[in-house]
Length: 199
Image (cartoon, rainbow, N blue to C red; front, side, top):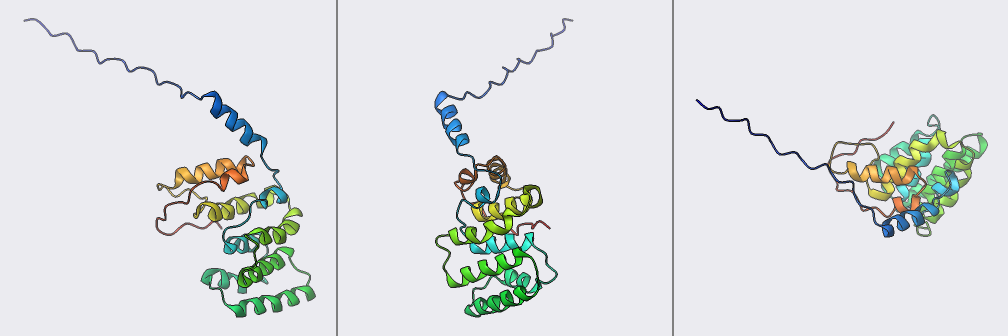
């Protein structure tokens, strides 16, 4: 009885390396030439889209012991005229007690939000640059990445295992390379459930 020879499976062709044309390389080179510095002036070059994110960043980067009132305001995210004057009263209190410049920045950002006077998102940057200039990038890098990601693509930078992770990765790649303007050109994330918040 004649045996059938085992059938060999055809070899797969090796995967081709993606081709990158010269125009794409030139484009990448131009983008790289416009990286911004890893400091407060770079981080706060692009205007904010949502003032709540600017307030949240200042709050998370400051000390919270004397600042619990703002955590409730951030949870509700309701713009009420009375908040402006309450923030003003708290700013006066903070002048008496030598406290965090970050707390004062968060309260000023809240006033700008309530007064609807952000100048297209630039006013928050003017408030945030001085206190963040006093800190080493390593102290605040993750907080800045998180709140800028929320502001740019509308979701947390923390990977969630969902369809937005690719977008989160693209934001992280652009942001950590100083391509802050490019990071803000990414599309909005698809809203899926509740986003996880960094601690």
